[in-house]
Length: 587
Image 1 (cartoon, rainbow, N blue to C red):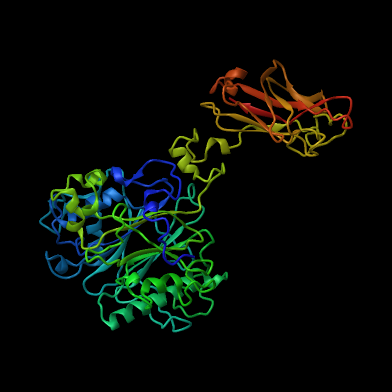
Image 2 (cartoon, rainbow, N blue to C red; image 1 turned 180 degrees about the vertical axis):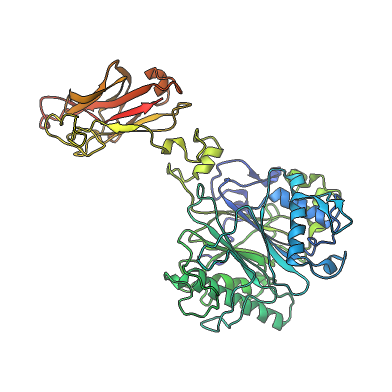
């Protein structure tokens, strides 16, 4: 929907536009983590040849160490890297590393180990040395090379086929036959790669696709034309292949040479994100459209049918700035060459920034680079001539309690309990077994006294709800986080939560309802209804197990019902109260 996102920056990179739920993003104080653990951090970085087999992988004032420290400090969930594998460009060897060799190099970069490329010495600097609990275990190295460089992606999450073509990664888009705005061909000199990511279902409702590329360098007209041709092909590919041009089938015009062919478009909750070194400063182009513009808008800028967002509008292109200086320079020349774009109809922006250690105050330097031998402020310039661009995206999340925060974040921040460790907040998990409906569905239980039969699972019908009041419970029994929830009652009357230790098989009339809870009866508490509903316990009230005398883990069984005022003169006279279904909970 938005081609360039500059609004609210630099305030946005400080987290002002979206309220935070944790305190890990405060770059002025050296905290560069995510606002919300469920946000997905994407980072693109041209590493200027530093990740290659012949490089010295030592602690010290060198590019390898600087790259490892900055990666550890920023901790992206998805990291796309350009200009990897070039030993000649790094000045430490010759030739470009193969896919297998670069894959090994990236493992050493992340995890350390023995550098078999340099005399089998121990690697002295690696990402996990500075961030022990952080990892990007899934790695894809592109097989497409210009004879010098390769692109690669490192991911926190596994790759998985999302559209039925049997592939989870491709090094370059399949050949596009000239059509619409696509001139035909592929993604250019180094390929435009895509990786399909399987995000964890406990947190996210969909998955994600990441596209990445290092487009043709150079300032000549022919260089620009190559970048544009690649971007036009890619934008067509995203619109028609991943998103079916708004329909249900991929490649509806049969112009994309995918083999085997994709069988489905991406689901409506799975965004495409793209990033990389696209080698053109779009803000300096004047009226000339650059590759980033084509990648986000396709043929019609501001259109609603051919853009690369899923809904046919334009994707959003990052407007990342350094958090304090406001600089958008991702290259040390002062140009903005590196970009991230995303389908904003699915993914929304939490924050965006460019990391430039030389522009940080002392207090703003992350702990992971403070020990850099050349000094923290020199870490970025030592690492590469490019600066990493970062965006944190808010994807559609699992949110059972409707508080707009991912359930897994609620659990991580201890705002929701998860006693059984299944990543579902206890307040969202129903427990107990319902019985005592009085509508004939249970056989032995007597019918409601006025034949005011309610819905199975509920109590007898009342004057405002023909289905009857409903009693349920959420939480866990050990330790006790149980909450009893009653609903379907008159709006503002009082309700009494009752516990017994005997279950009556047939039940007996109780006001306008049927009570099956018997034996030693305990009134757990009296609660005023709000909109016909109430719960126990509330603040200041004892736990269900404490008030009811059923110790967690004891194996005792408690039986619960809620009765409530229902004094309508015309409904089932002369009684003036009714009762919910019953609930059995084993402690």
